[in-house]
Amino acid sequence: MRDVLLVQRERVLKALRGHGDEFLPMGRDERVLHDGYNEQKPRDLAVQVEQAALLFVSLLRRLGPSEWDLKIAYMFPDPSTRTLRWIAVHTAHEVVHHLHDIEYATGS
Image (cartoon, rainbow, N blue to C red):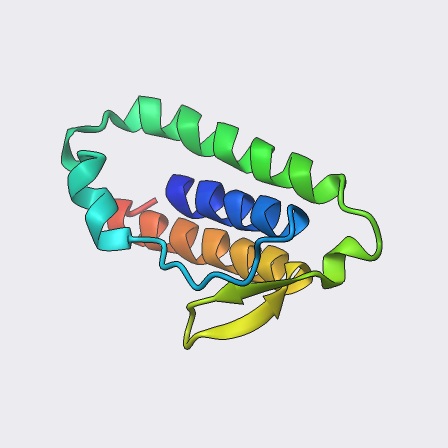
C-alpha cells in the first residue's frame, strides 16, 4: 500500500511536469526483493503508509481544475492513457482493497 501511494504520487508529478507519456511498470515483484519486504517492521511500515497517504492526498488537493484531466500512460490492466482523476479514484480503490486484504489476513 505504501509503495502504491508513492508510485501513484510520482506518476501524478510526472504528468504535471509534462512527462506522462512513458509506460513504466511499478515493478511490484522487484520491490519485494529490493526493498526487503520480509525484513520490514510492521510499526515502521504503518508510519510509512500514513506518510505516503498524506503526501499523495496533499498533492491531489493542490491540483487545479484543468489538471485533473491531464493524461498519463498507465500499465493497468493494459497499457492505456488515463486521467489524473482516474489515478486518484483507482488509487483510493486499491487502498480500500488492500485494507480489506489486511483485515482478512489478520482476522481484524
